[in-house]
Image 1 (cartoon, rainbow, N blue to C red):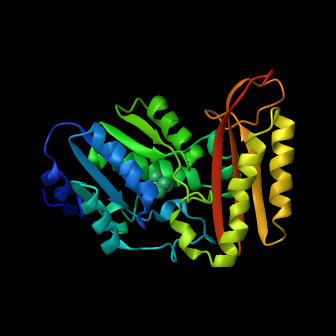
Image 2 (cartoon, helix red, strand yellow; image 1 turned 90 degrees about the vertical axis):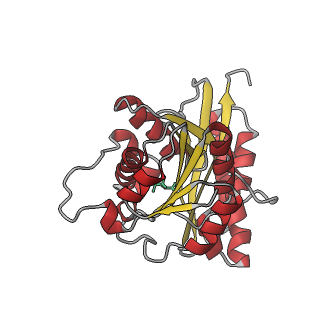
Length: 279
Ligand code: PAF
């Protein structure tokens, strides 16, 4: 089947074939991590739609919206190679009416951890994701665990607003040396990249500890050892569903998450671990 490129609502309606539809929302600059999301969608659905849209609503005024990598032709090659049926690639005018008024609020959970450093970011993410759900009408949608708070908030939105869509989370894909794949990795020089490795190293070292205080302390030590070129925004050990900090009495799954800047490039990463008091 030839890949269909849909640029507007009408194209999307025409491309609809029936059967189970899976959506993989992306901002393009596709890499192996996106390929793994697409493969997960492919296994589950009759028709796979990948959206490629750099969403201005989720970027703050001093963030990298204008220089975010845009590699549309290469992205199409990836989609063809992965057997994607439809690429939805709207422009900003197609997605947002100039007089739009209503948007989605991520609520208090959108204001902690990553949200505390990027005000309004998750409102922008949820608004575009809800619009994509309404336009594509998928039965299921696949998101990466690398954006753990985004995934948790999308699950919350689906539950709180009764959206009839199954959400699948896909594991983070890493380079052999541990660096989590990200579209922003292409900004990193060789030197930056060496510094950036401290993120995954810190998460691994933290996750090897048993109790929350030790997990946080060990991970922070590894981040500090990377030197002043690594500017840490946060290191957080949180409940994976609420993103509230966990205390020493907490038991169950937890997410150890980090965000840091190397030069002008901001990177995030996380691991999931299980806390048991006798661990
Ligand atoms: O994870 C991303 O690439 C974006 O936040 C998403 C989900 C495509 C919304 O713009």
